[in-house]
Length: 487
Length: 139
Image 1 (cartoon, helix red, strand yellow):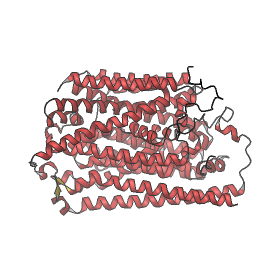
Image 2 (spheres, helix red, strand yellow):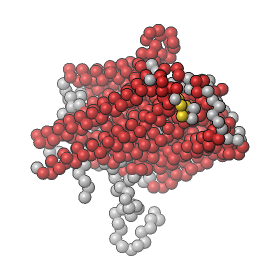
Image 3 (cartoon, one colour):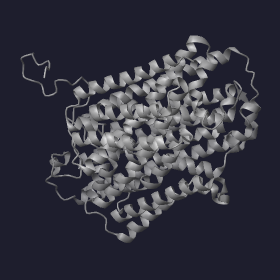
């Protein structure tokens, strides 16, 4: 493999990203440009940007790695991520767009009229965002180390610096175009190699033994009902609670356009997941030697030079590393935009200046964490974030939109119960490992019961409390009334 | 500023707007009604009337029912497909290009279901909203 070519590809992506960012700096003139791109983004570009930000290291490198490592169970992750958007579409997309709020804490504050609920939401949003950025930086460290032999900390630090720099410079407006570009780059970076792989492999008589490569016990028939169901529920609901997903709807001009944008997103990410999954299947057939924890996640980067000989293989590797970099950059910058908005509005007065400093702060924290920890499987780390978001924020957001008797105390109780139970279970699972006995599956995949506990707590406390905010009717009417056609 | 405004005519309010692109909008957060917000237009807030409340309630109920019906039928579809690929061992003996059918279905089969449900829901939700809007305009 030619490291110069890989470094060249990395440099090119960084250059284009900052060029679009600088262009955005020229056209980002107002606070509204910074926070919602002044709502001038067309659905197709908005959808590309949402997809560009949603597809992270987890599915770019992690999915094929986990398919190789553990079999068809890995496919539940992308299925859950895509179906999560279906729930976003049905339960929150249009109402949240109409709420006029910009961040999740804004929404909770406006709906429940409680500063305490707002502060707790802000803390949870920050925590979720940081949890999500860490695997992106791990991915960057891993990928640059494999293709160009760059020390891991350099990879992580480079991504962090570029992200905080471009977010601080252009805000939402330039980030929208950066992320739209990154979606198409990511898609091409996996789709082109897949075409080459299929042509190469199609030429030969398949010499693989299906029973060995795709064994029954690692296929769908080996699934564990509780683990699968709990994971799927958490992934489905988790998307609603992700900070950077909701922010995106505020860049749509109306509730209806927010819905169509979501539909386009679902089509785009589904296409991407199918391509990424194909790499996993090809990897099982051609690279079983890479099926080791820690190495498996690099399979998407190593396959091109193994399967396609000569310069073509080197060029494909360069394309994949460019796409991987776009994945780390896209997701992290989307998260940093939303986290910075939360920090700058909660601690300062939502000015552009505070937004810029918040961007630096919000990237520095996860960078320190990433440098101090060892990467786990990328797709499972990202999955954990979804489980936590689904347990802490999603029940309250959904109830806030659809249930008029929700009270501030109910929401606070639900968020605390959900996040403490989920964090506790995940900690216990990491500490105990497989020694947890019969409860092992319950604490390794806590979504099913922590989400239920958070929802029940919210409902019961709200019913006992009975102090629904005075503006409930007006707020709900705003959330659910369709816009009149502009004219 | 070196904007291209040398045309001499009256300056148009949106000089840089490409056709088809939504109008630039100014926003601030909802919880500060004192600042120059979208809510400012609604500063003179009439009390929510009985009719409005009724309208919202029935619209919410209709939309909520629609979403629930779609989620439940989506989950049923997922459970069904999952049952087929995990519960019928004979399927595993068939393969396309070396990959057993259950693996293929799990890798590719769920996404079309998700997309179909997404499009169907969006169309249905728009129809509900249109119906309610017509109802209000008639009154």
